[in-house]
Each structure stands twice: as structure tokens, then as C-alpha cells.
Length: 98
Image 1 (tube, helix red, strand yellow):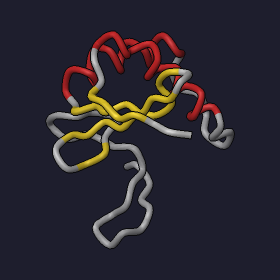
Image 2 (cartoon, rainbow, N blue to C red):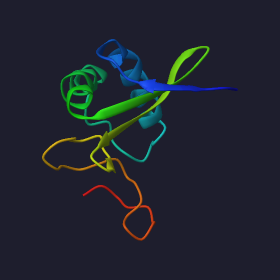
Image 3 (cartoon, one colour):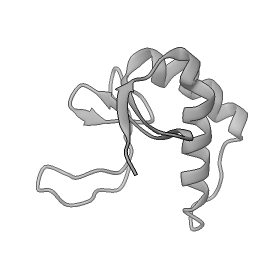
Image 4 (cartoon, one colour):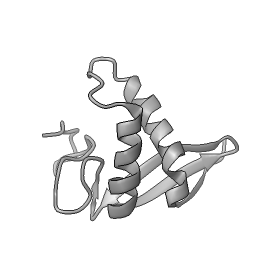
């Protein structure tokens, strides 16, 4: 299966939201704190406006995305700090969001 990477646009908000929602729901040990509509507004109004977002597409459409705030993978806030998606700490180990 081949993927194409490209910068996200505002028209990708629904597809990015759907990918995020589907992947987050697999984390059954975490409570769902927000509705899909709240996530859609956040992705549209914060992530796509404040982050450098890249999407991965295959023949079915967008299947993955990454949002960068500076040098960090982010999801909570992209400018002015905030909590990011769990990623490696400076020693390369997985870190939990704070």
C-alpha cells in the first residue's frame, strides 16, 4: 500500500477529525472527554491554524496526520505551549501527556 504525504488544508478538517476520532476510540482505557463535534471545532480552529499539519493519503483518502508545533508533535496546543500527543521525551522514551 502506497501513501502520499502533503500539507493539510482547511478542507481536510473533517477527514482529520475522523482519523483522530477513530484512532482515539481504540484507546479504550481512556475516557471520551469530548464529542466528535468538539474535536472537529478544535482541529479546525486550533490545530489547522496554529500547527504545521501533514496528512498521509492512500486511495481511500486521508488515513493519518501529524501536527507539528515547532519541533514537537502536538495536539492540545500548537503555539504558546500546551500538552502534546504522547511522544518521545528527550531520552527517546515514550512520555505521557502532562
